Image 1 (cartoon, rainbow, N blue to C red):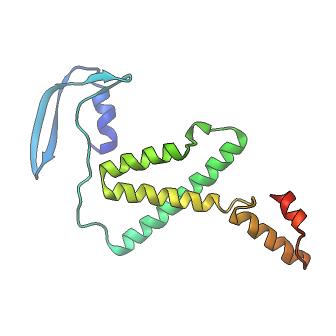
Image 2 (image 1 turned 120 degrees about the horizontal axis):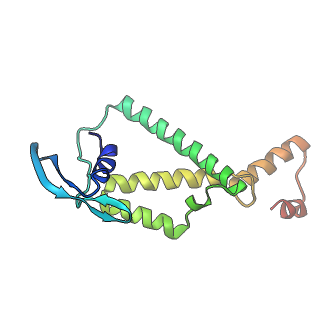
Image 3 (image 1 turned 120 degrees about the vertical axis):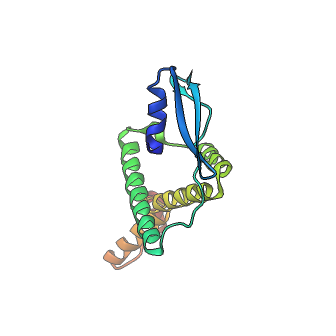
Length: 163
């Protein structure tokens, strides 16, 4: 069983008694019989899956995984921006308060989770900063490119209109 299948398997019990085998300190321990309780429309039991620190991945594997995550976050951020522009998936938009809640929850889980969330937020903000809107960097890049193409700078009034 994988961590992704544990919750659906527990929910599928419908509240009937079941047992579960877990690993604690390198030993298999059988828990139960347990009866899952229905909360928020889903059957749950009172334990939480937690990652264990280990030796980690090799350097090439870690670098590859980092690039994969950066690609996923970049794709998801661009997709979300497109969704916001068209009015889709606006429920996924969060304010500073929402980001703080997520970061706080990650911090309570582990320093690694907190740093991961902090990295995701930083990457997403960096991508947003590239939007072609003044006063963001993307707007300044667009204006600089247009000035290069024109061969001369824009007036202050043109900058104000663009922004």
